[in-house]
Image (cartoon, rainbow, N blue to C red; front, top):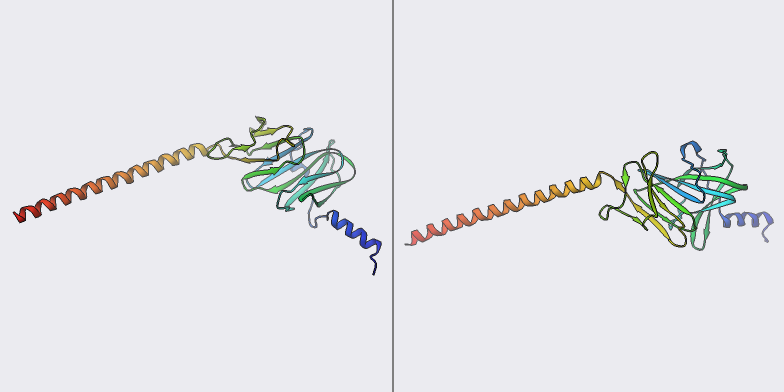
Length: 234
């Protein structure tokens, strides 16, 4: 039986990308939407990361989901430059072996799209287009220690926002960089690590002294026993 026109249309939609079921839109008030041209911003928190992407005169925007292709996002929003919410749909598409999340709009759109993902304390993202990338660390967190974690590649600039958060900035990212990773830690971690090393060193010294004096005492006992045996033999 020859496929009907309806079947062909449905098959085309499934191949192009299906709309995610059960994905509810979020509240734009929960996101920070600064007016930064051609910039992607990642706001890192303890257990999540908020992604804010600038969109300019486009009917769709593609966002790389990484190697896993997981669609584990929540609270997506789209807001134009006037602060008005805009209708959109979200789908998943595979392009050249990479999985992308697609925000689609009915008409040409300029503004911001944002969504939230889970975060495990380490930031890694592939770079697929040129532009500026900003990673905003949580309050009282930093990076740059070879022992605790660094940012790769090295940021072009590091600044602080009005909340005191450290902001890592990369300009003209693609194709200069293929990916960006940031390992970050609490600002008190270096002093805590230093204190732990001091305690560990102290413990090693105590154990070493204990064994030294124990062995010394055993040697003295052995010498006394040997002298006693010699006297009995004489």
